[in-house]
Length: 220
Image (cartoon, rainbow, N blue to C red; front, top):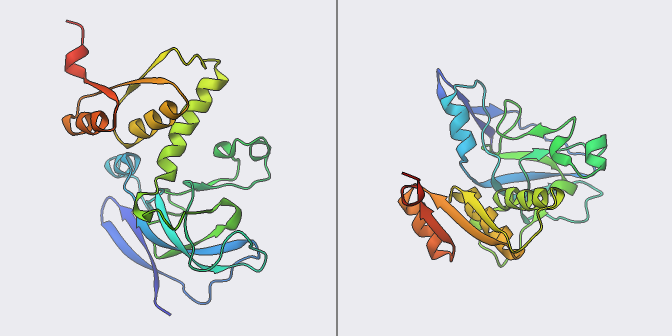
C-alpha cells in the first residue's frame, strides 16, 4: 500500500507534504474512502494564505474516486467519480434537520486546520457524496461553485424578490459570479454583470451575458 499524505501550509514553511498513518483505514458502515483526483484553488484559499493562517489544509472544491465503501452504502460503489460540498455536517442538529446544513453545529470544514482535499484520500459520509455523470468530464464538475449560485437564488425567494421582470445586477464575473448568473438565468431572471477584469468580461459576454466594465458605468 502506498503511503498516504496531505499538504499542510504554514507561513514559515510554505507547503509541506506530511505523511499520514496508512495502517488499514477503517470506515464505518455508512462511510466511503475517496481518493482526491482534482482540487480547485479558490479565492478564499488564497486569502487564507495571505493572512498567514497556520496549519492550513486547503482544498474545498474537489473531485474524487471512491476506493472503498462501508457495508451499508448503496448509493455508491468502488470506482465511482464523485464530488461534494466543502464541509461535512452531522445530519442531526436543529439546523441540519431544517435543511440548513451550512449552519451545522458540528460541521467539519475543508480548507481549515482539520481537513482539506489536498491529500491523497479521505473518509466521508456516503450520504454527503454525489456521484458525477460518467459522460461528464470530471474536471469541469463545479458543484461547490454552482451551489453558491443556487443559494443566492434561494435567498431571493426567501426575501420575496421573485419578480422575474426585475433585472438583477451581479458584481464580479469570476467563477462564482458566472455560476450565479447561470443559475439565475435558468430560473428566468434578467441578468447584468459588471467586472473590471477584461478577461472575465470577455468570458461573460461569450457566455451570452451583458457584462460591463466598471469604468464604463462609473458616474463622473
